[in-house]
Length: 445
Image 1 (cartoon, rainbow, N blue to C red):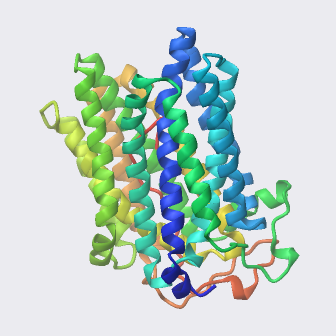
Image 2: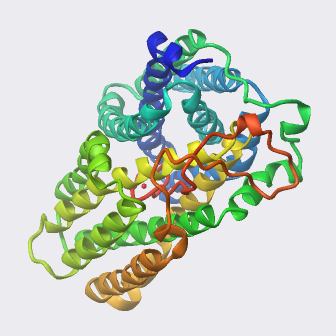
């Protein structure tokens, strides 16, 4: 399918709007579900089960999600996921309306929600290069980041409002949002992965699921980028937790803490919108990653030493503003580098690794805060991040990155053949999801 033809037909717009509705419904459910469990059981620990089940489902579904996206029609995979979400959101809305809901039903929704979202994300991101022209790919990736921030901000704010009206309303709205997303996807053409034959389609067994890991391991740029992404996500999550937890224990009002967290989301949204312009200004080799990492280091040090109740929120928002520029650059290069037959698995492995780093960050942040305190803990994180930024700046894998658009076709040294027709000219640069505002969804850029 020619990219220009799809641009004229609005294929990317259909995908973007449908995914935005899904992001909204997802974020709405994540803020509402623990509150409903708390009202139902009176147990904070049982309320915490919901977030754990959702996160665990996303992580466990990560590798199979990429394999599904590479084996089957990606639009069809997304349609099945949207249909499942329509059913479970609608069923839960009916149970809540009839006052017949149980903890097991809420856990089932969280399980389906997390797994279906992981599969939808892998299929949707893998589809982007077939929907936009190559020169517009980076802009499309930046728009996806803006969609995520907007969905999170809208979903978390609207979810609380709807819950106050009636506990079933968030899931009625979520069901309608997923239904609208399903209808929009029906207007997209089929999106089968490019392959010359059945040998290029992944087998849904251990070998097939791990092909994305082997692909990344075969490329120095992918390896370096993924390690950097995981470390950055981890430390951003730990810093965020230290800031929020220390503010609460220091007596800051919950409303002010919520406003500080909102600054993070606003910064990320504005940064995603500004990413195309900033990327064009910074795009010399791997300059985006170096600028963002060193900005992260300086701003984290500022959080540790600068006075003011609002200073941490403003500086976290500044970090979130900078991150999408690097994220758009690396995700674009990853999609260009990876053959279409492998994109789903590479996307899912990158998301699994970087998301896993963010998922354990709150635990590490709590331990650091207990043992070292806020000031020492933040300075320690600053020092480690400075070491990561320095090693990244000195890494030959990132110092010798060709310009975007360079005619360099990469071929992984893996057991699964990759057809030459599936490989796109690309700059061999890894995807590096850098810091995003933490939510119940991923604690994670």
